[in-house]
Image 1 (cartoon, rainbow, N blue to C red):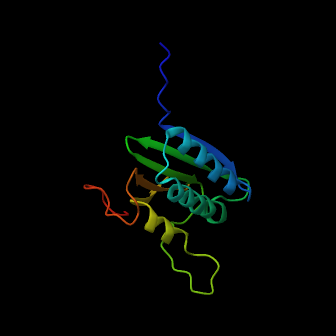
Image 2: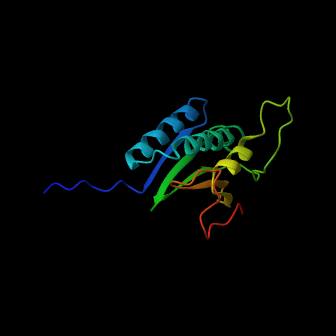
Length: 148
């Protein structure tokens, strides 16, 4: 009998500090989600990957460095993490109407069920979690806490 192997619950990839890394990270995320059979939150997850990797590229990865994208699946939940070696702590900002940037973490906070920042030496990890089958408009699953 040839049983199909379960999908690998951890996937990660390193990206250099260059503009092409952002669409590459989104495409990689789409392929991993498809391999895992995740369709219902794929757009939210991919959008958040784009926002977090853009932040890492612009604010978190010093010249000559890069960032790591990690995708994990735990049961019905997907967690994305973006690891970088930059200083500073991301914060929710609100770009003004005329500003062209400053809304990435607001989008992540609106779409993810949970998100936060963890220390890393050097740098930080910005993460977001998505419960499969729960849209951002629905209340989070019981027992999930908001951003830390």
